Image (tube, rainbow, N blue to C red; front, top):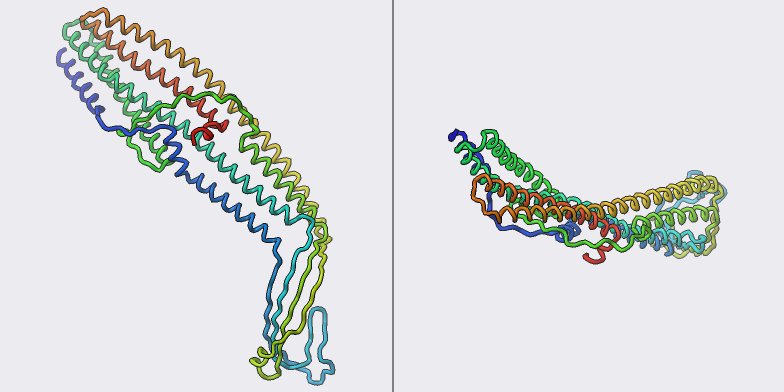
Length: 441
């Protein structure tokens, strides 16, 4: 009987000693993690680049207000294969038939300007500018969604961290209880089953710590992905959430998602306006200036012979009637896309309002649970205090006192867990409403 008890005691001590490490901890908080993530996030960096691309598109759209200048050069040798031809040149369609044999060169400068297009260029610039605003709002959405993901991840990591600490704190207590029960067992005061149950409780605590540490390392790896920093589970101390006040009000129309959909609808409406105006004529002006030189025998002298030949000015009006049929189908398509965007906006706003309502309900419920846990913890602590006041040195009563100490520790963790869950929902509400970024970042 004594050999059995000593063997179990050695196993329990070995298991417990594996988890005793004293290291200097690195303190990290949610605000710290979020700030590092906003600096390191690939999605946010790409969103920022998208804004810069959109700004370049605005500049590109404005360039359509500038005149178009192009040059044309040509050097050729023209040979008349019919020497008996009576004419010097003739035209057939867009072909010019020259009856002279010569080297000839042409330099042409063409300048054109779109004088009036019924606001098509202006709408293109407006679309580009709205796209910049949309991309800037999308960056806010990405920041918000990243923060929401981090709140959940940090809360799970913090709960795991607290649970490990609680189990490590009760493990020496269980070990001491096991040692006392082993002495009682040797004196025949407790059964073999009871001491075995205590050994199992200690072993399960060790196993729970091992599993929790695996989860903790995984959580810290996930945090490292966001922040770009490495965290060691034995060298990291997680700080709790600061007290979070519930947002005073929530208006879905202030959400960036709502504004993005409105901008996208406006862009489609501008596109529709452009297509309608493409059915109207476009008026422009142009100027053409030509230099011409020729020589019958020498191509170099043909170049030297280049002189002013012609200068022309004109006004154009371009209308393509066949575009009416093509644009008619495009208009129907854009109108359907606008209807689709309106439905998507309504759906997204409903989802956001539902999510916010759930967070509000959960935050209030967890606050109530948290207060109940505090009351329960006070009762458990009061019971422990009364047991200590008895000052009973009997081994059996000492075991009961130690078990009560372990219960206080675990109840304390359970209370902290409820507080974290309440703070998580409140923090998400604060982030969704935009108050968190306004106050902290």
